[in-house]
Length: 375
Image 1 (cartoon, helix red, strand yellow):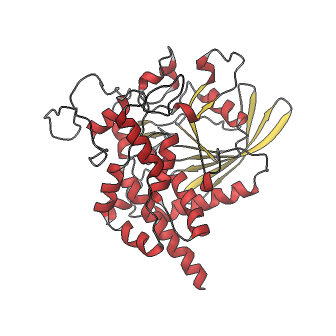
Image 2: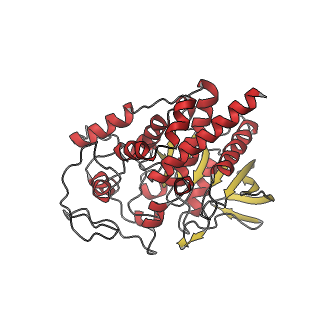
């Protein structure tokens, strides 16, 4: 079973094999396969029942026109995207505790469910703005337009000054803007990142990546002691090292106002050698939950990022929502939550291993909850 307990980031690593990830060539009717088989495949429209995780469907998902919410003047979705949207709006599979424990061990069923669920990636053509390349860590991972975070700017007409690769996501019970999922800041976007933190009144940042894993995954966007970005003064108050994460507490000052910010940096993820990462993730989810409850009532969304802001970020946010659902309703709907997240940011929970992992984590959580109840 060990294979599937790792909270892996296979796809993110795949995107990262060379320092400047190449954009898939959408125009070609072939599938450049990454593993072994050099045979080319002709791209035909993929039915929902077929493997959506294959490179073919990934390429299709990312290049079909209009695969985000319709916006602008009556943008038409293709029938394929229409069905993908409907699938994401309707997908559901409620699991009782007993079903959850069984299903967490059923790799084949989980694979089938994962590959049937549309990714809902954005067509890069939706963002045809010169200079935007500098603002994205990966060319093909872009924020879905209808839910993207728009930065306040002196010049609202200058698209680049309003842009950040980040989306608002709903929380448990459709709570609006409970989270923001974003890419790991790059050298070019550190200022934008801090503008977002301040604008959104975020009390907490959850960072789930090392600064480097084979190559850069995230810029070190915080200071050793103090720094000013975009008129926001950021000062480190304390650094605490826990087993699986470090906690930094910052003071932010801007325009005479002062706020506190906590950054949970989960560092034990990429070390793939331990058999099971579920307990430390659960602990982090619960720790962040507690911190959120203690934050001022005026606080905004929790910001979560990894490198691309979809894989590990999706796992963390889904787990957080699902733990609440389990406590409140006594059941979980992991498929529903995944669909909900992908409607607002394509690709959330990026690999089948991650999807299985979320099931493992919830299964463990349910056992903890029922065990505590018995005592």
